[in-house]
Length: 178
Image (cartoon, rainbow, N blue to C red; front, side, top):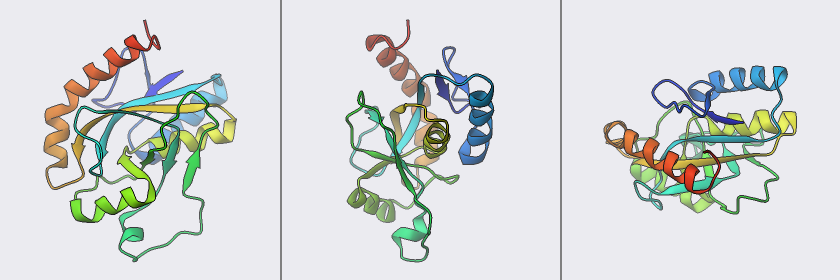
């Protein structure tokens, strides 16, 4: 099953699950309860913490939920905040960070790279969480639309259609969709 966020990030070949950590968790759980898929592929856009360029395609099987307060030493969590799928088809070690917020502090977010966290997408951590609970193999494929800086939203809007087209072309080339 191919899933995506929703709102303006939809694809004719993917099921929208909602934007952000909460809506995507609720809706994906509902889908899995009523029609458990053999495999989940989440597709969408992502912001780069600096090591990936706009238009790059990143595959991942790892996600985190690390808030900016952790980077500045202003917060901690007792929870396991990094998840990995047992997926032998994806070899990229880039961790995708998820939060209900879009990062705009370029200097602070560059620190994510030191932890192997290279990009952010609002939903991927919740997708891995649900997949883990239902024991479903999962992966994500993302196109970089912006950097995590003060222009994040404007760049996302400017590059969003390009990213959707590039993602569809990539999935066709990989014969994931037809």
